[in-house]
Length: 445
Image (cartoon, rainbow, N blue to C red):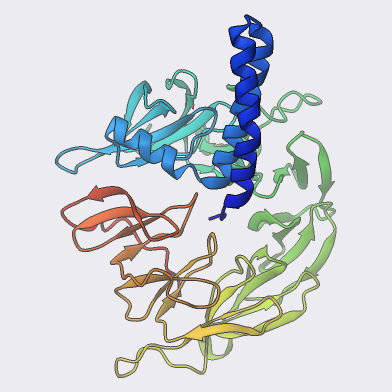
């Protein structure tokens, strides 16, 4: 969490007292237009100060949660947020849209997973059978009305692009097993299909990946094309037989495989330029912090992990377990250190992007860093949070723990699931009879 500069804010508050006095004088004198200008200046200052004091809107979210009796309120966007309530018998969750005054907007949604609002639209979806297929029902919800605008039945969707820039990818199976993939962009509370109106194109593709890194790639006939969010082609692959391998575009790079070489992965940049190919049976992961994690089958069927840079050079490796880099650090376990033996946990450690060790601990599991904190476990059944020096930051143990997001983390004990902020304070307490087994801690080996 961003620590506010209290002296700076105090000085600014003092300076705004003069503006407040000017507002009073102008209003009393009947100069309403000038008074409104001063009022706008004060409102902008209050919003700016609130963002510094509470960048994740936790105080606002708590206030609204109390007003609507909610267990959770998401960050506000476009003036609205999602609120969640549990039914009395803990069967289903109920989600609905609220404004900053705590007023419910639109209808209730049950058994749904949702995204925050972006450009006036959010997406909710549930898994259900449709036409003999186990498809998702995707629905776009308006921030203005809280009502469903449009819905689709889909096999797959990508939400990373929507979180970044309001673009969602939808993939579905049509009649005759024909598959189509398309993109929708939220703009001022409306949806627009991308690529559909350019040069007679339909905007449908057989294979596509979303705008996870401001770039989407599609398989258009025999060609792999790269688009930006303004629908401009920024590059395309010269190899006509490129197929998806690990298709997420990160840091301007994407892993593809060739139809003629099903085991080997090749790296391309987003202009379509070929960079290099990994050995067979080496499975790459997307680039993060300038490095990609690669998993090799290894000798005698024993796998190991290592990291490479964007030139293909190995930076660090020979790990039995490894995670992607996040916030400059990655959790690894060395192959030479055994697993649980006589009750002793294997030693996990965090490394920097140069391959050097940052710190280590007697941990059974360790997750990626999110918002400056990572989840670790020293006995496999109790989780706690550490900072980037390896310190136990809250001195508390949890039966389950999820990564921090928007300033809050979801945690649980034997009988309760609740949220904590970056100080360890309980927020949006959520009482249940037992842990929901479907809520898995995001703790990775």
